[in-house]
Length: 417
Ligand code: HAM
Image (cartoon, rainbow, N blue to C red; front, side, top):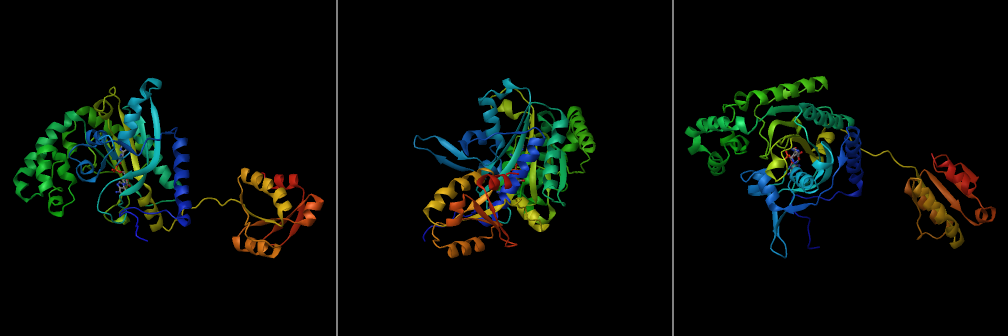
């Protein structure tokens, strides 16, 4: 075959798709228990939405967006992240008028053109939440609690929470001046991207992955020393609420998120054994974004995590997520009359949530029983001449070999709980 899967993407084959289903199922359950409701947005949007929200100088916009022009010359992008689309939808659908606070969650593929490596893909799947409508630090702590509960529900033990405050527009000006002052003598040693960052967005200097630039990060001034009083108070309150929720954390003033919309809270879930891509999930507040994108000034906070890294972390702890298996029944129906009687029963059992299979290619009783054996089914339902005559169904327990004869109603109620 001449066709290959695009680099940085992967197929989820049936043998592992049940693990993904489990991750999704548990996330939905935990999100619902915190009062979050699902929002589903398109996987492509106007490219400008991301340029405006993630920041012109962010790596996502500069290097990683899959941009394309449609038949009418409009420029779109495959979504690199989920926050901007949710905010676009929030504004466009006037959600702010319907309720003061919205708690939304989403699950779906995101796209970033980056060099693929373990834990970094070009198409990856995020789970995320956005809590829109309040500046109260309780909400920051609440969604961190949701995230920690999610990871714990899957059995993951070694994930750590790191938190920071990046302040607001007010605190940023002085901090950026301090950063520029600090980096000025080092300018000639910085990479070409950082030369631009120095001019356009000095905070991004702290996010550079080039080793020679990274070396300057340790002694750079800390945003913490430049927080104004309300931002400092917001951060202290967040810590208080995390304590109330009994969530442990470390404060890391060096957290710089890869996207530009953050204000105040910024946090990451770190999984140390994942190597370079050790951020399991990340998020924070974005109090200015909704207004920046044309909505009313509305504070908000959120996070997103990638399922791929989560699976790697689970694998590291030897945890294999799996769904509780459904009762598996195999139908053995000999002849057309048996199929006529059996197929409606098969549908009803399926409606009751059971897994039911039949192989029409196997003709004889012997061949069908062999297929039933090989399938791994727990029960086999037999409809042959005798059963048709007695209007009954024979049920065989595949493990013990025991057989019994039941009426249709008896059979359906046997599997109804
Ligand atoms: P982010 O830190 O860019 O934040 O991505 C969140 C998570 O997505 C990462 O921690 C990681 O698990 C996963 N991820 C990111 N890029 C890749 C990749 N190339 N391959 C595999 N996994 C990846 C955001 O996306 C923000 N929208 C989070 C947010 C929501 N902030 C506020 N609300």
